[in-house]
Image (tube, rainbow, N blue to C red; front, side, top):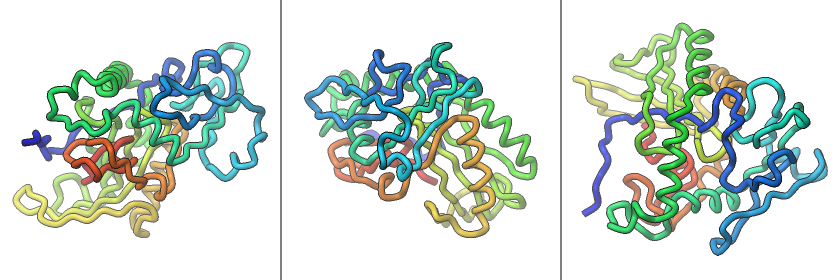
Length: 284
């Protein structure tokens, strides 16, 4: 019988990078390309790693359509940017993230066809690497702390809920309640921001809950496009995540790509999608 995780809302997790993100490296980025433009390369399972392709800005005609360009400069660095040197300041690192590339990426962190209750699971190389990433993320929370401060400063009318510890999921999470719908109210409306530690991406969705006697009796979620009453807050949070964390969103067709050979959280094999692997199976 599989162990079920508690359905108590869990902690937020920060992208494993400081506010300058200089020490964080994509798992598929080779050391030799740390100062050049790069992108994730699709890799076969038999390969230990992939070599990113180095190219000149704008050399790929598809770059403009991907919507995943991160600019690295002297200010806060994008979570997905490789470490810089004094010679590459102001360089732009282009990273189009496709469903195939992200699927290859998450297979670096989730053992294939092994349940979490299997005695072999914790010793699998993928599980070990995921724990290491979570540990690194937990030890450096500066970028996430900055984001929370900015949210509180720029949205004083909203209440926030977040957990300071990284336990299960490869993402951080903050719930920002709409004005007039604070945490603990009978009707709770919130926009939720998730920030992955595995890739420089974030996701924003809307949550509505009806609460009686401290129990949720009805709930509904919306992924983009959100209902009109949530869109103003969504826009503000998206802008803050981009500017502080250097992350971008993924289109729904990428987010909901099946990853059928891994178990994530309480989802059985065959039910996981990229959204669960990059962020969490606990959407509430």
